Image 1 (cartoon, rainbow, N blue to C red):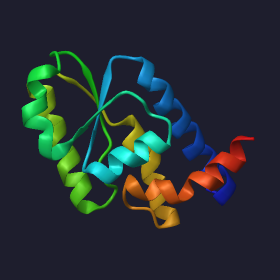
Image 2: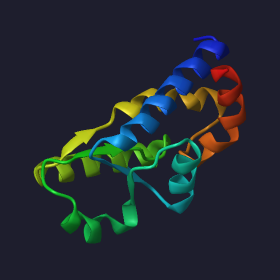
Image 3: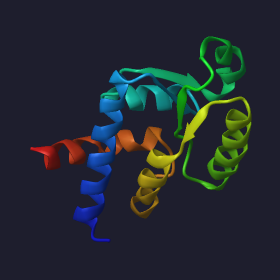
Length: 128
């Protein structure tokens, strides 16, 4: 995939994720920097950090769609698989679509959700 095509795919995914804010979904991320990165990308909906998931599950109705957006490295992939099984077993609708789409960022040296922040200026320029 050419660099420009990669940027365009990422820009589209980030834009769609921001639009998801209007729906009743929860995004699950690793930490507070990931939360800040999502906010900078325009996501205004509910974001839960992995470390707080157990406590916050009480307030998330069963059947809610949970978008898993963990890091793109090996550890993140392990966590994705583990959490996906656990959440599905509890009755949540697990969505890893954005993780799969944004994982292409590894080609640009971005292995974390928070790392997307450094690409935001380039993504914004391509939007115009």
